[in-house]
Length: 343
Image 1 (cartoon, rainbow, N blue to C red):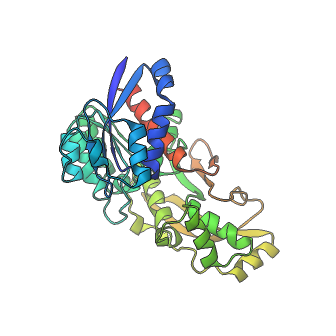
Image 2 (cartoon, rainbow, N blue to C red):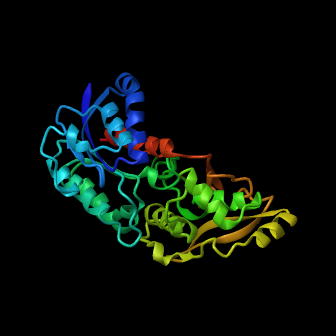
Image 3 (tube, rainbow, N blue to C red):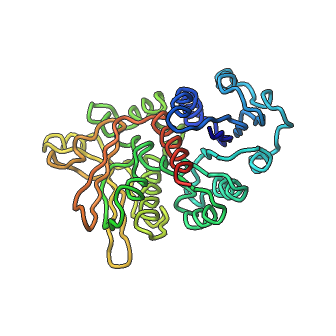
């Protein structure tokens, strides 16, 4: 039996879902993978930090978060003054980094992952920023330290997008893709089809936790653009930033436009596209009317879809239905298992 010490940076919806998933899968991990684990540290921005080399009680940690308390009270060591200090002090073999996304430069997540890899930890993240701003650097550092930088949950949550090309499709060359990658805007457009005004749809999405308090990252296309950039960077091998994506959000889509599309048997979708043009890639995120013959037409609610075009497979689609924090957490768990199995 191999014991792994796990550290978590970020303990919001995804981090807490990961904790619950780890507890639920504990016996399976031991039986099928020969793995045991203990969470030796959790760091948050607003609810303190805790380090316990003997392993934190995850049920207790979840209760602290539910009550709005501080994780400091669970720490067996003096609470670190910063996340960087936490990463240096916490005895761990794996870091799960789930801090908020920074579209501009990927910080501070990039530095968190560098610090973990520098200590020889596997570094696993659901944060898209480090993938588009430091993929080559982090991958090279991981190789030098004989560990892994993994990021399956950054696009389409737990769906195996990156690992599909890394494992199941060897030597396939990606020429382009087209899909729906932002669940929030897909839900908003669907609500507008049901007759809700734009602001009313946003309020509803916020009430169920799909839209942030400031939903501009979704509405203005930034979340979709950084996902497009991540796919291009990793799977096409061309470093690409979200600022390079021809981006247009959904603010200009009016109820009248929605009705006109419905009358024509079409729907509005925020469509993400990328295709090779010689040695370059052209990418776009923008609202489009799609017909019933398009695979994008039937993607409803918070579901996502992407269709890949490769030199050997002209059309390969992956759909993820109604994801949530639990599916993102599964992507993190799968990354950990794959990192350990492949070493």
